Image (cartoon, rainbow, N blue to C red; front, side, top):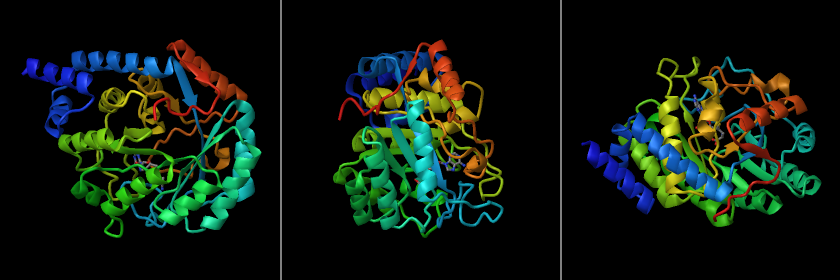
Length: 350
Ligand code: SAH
């Protein structure tokens, strides 16, 4: 049994590819020895592409108004206890103005699917950021839109798009989302984004309700085949005002193990140590970096609104919107042997 799993590990390292069965076994059969071997390989791969640099992205949570009703998400439409807000163009630009002198060269605009942001409005915001900050990358994470909309935003100056696939297993995807949403449309969005020319990020929650080891194995296979430029994974964390309020939270240990595997599958991928990983325990972000992640996304949203973008409970709301906080983050990384750098941080492979 032990030999079998080490054979699987060797096959992963050699081919950067496994069958779904083997991915599932690698997850099921993990122990601390295997995890530390994979971690060491992941760190060596990361170093080959990115040295010890850590990229930062300024996350701007532009709206918590959402027309969707994802069963796991605290800002879902049905949560009437959520106090809603949205940022207007000028407020979004202020966040960028604040972030630039701190060293941010990527701005991530994330939000619920808020119909207020028509193509026209959002294109105007994007082109204004593009002209004021020509050396910055603009990342959008605004959910599912039409192909035409993605094209217009790309032409206005957006470079990257984050849209987690949430689950590569159709049946599992459907248990996490209301029937108004579809697995097929999610996948359509991801392939449109990539065809248009965005750097694309997919991803999923670790330990989401009903998720099996085989579901995660299919997520890994999807990442292997789709070859995204970026991949965001973090533990599922229950939110009381959702139908999944009573489920267990996902594990930091498994999240970190999967970060190492994803780094080995795709050594040049951009892999964040996510806020969710940082939120479930002390030193989560550091653990993520030490498992193969190379990106951190501090919050640049206005301090007074941060608590309202509560997609899960206990979300880390400290950001790096001040020079002091950015210095603290730099120091945290330096202590573990890594260095925060101040450039766009594009992927080195694609
Ligand atoms: N509306 C955008 C942004 C969603 S928030 C979109 O659809 O892409 C970003 C991510 O947070 C989601 O993709 C989801 O994977 C994650 N998330 C939502 N609720 C969560 C929870 N309860 N625990 C952990 N992660 C969660």
